[in-house]
Image (cartoon, rainbow, N blue to C red):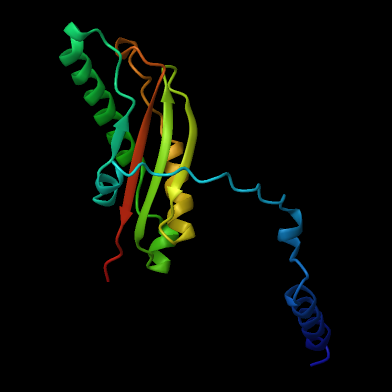
Length: 169
């Protein structure tokens, strides 16, 4: 019994010290402060219904000469379709969200350049579940995208991605 008492006292002391209000646990002390959130991007009202239905959208169009409009439209839609397929391939139901039985829709907006750089990539609507939100932003923003085709005559295009998750018992 005497061997257990010092360990029990140490455990109780650690519990009291680190669980006391206003005192941070060691791992919290090591973390840098979270950056201040940027002003949220507003979802344009004209695309809101499509996003609410779970339809991803590419916007930015093209500046091709009129005689090549159909060809440019096809290139634009193929580029958009291929990038959205890459996103779907890169995302799964987050394991932590399964454990928490979380459901919801996360909307992410990104700008892709002619060099395939993604900037900015941001969540514009939360699902209400931090695990769904964090996972989706990392997966969508971490996807390798195709560069914007030079035939379109623009430097960048915007992709709006709604990712819906529904937990079924």
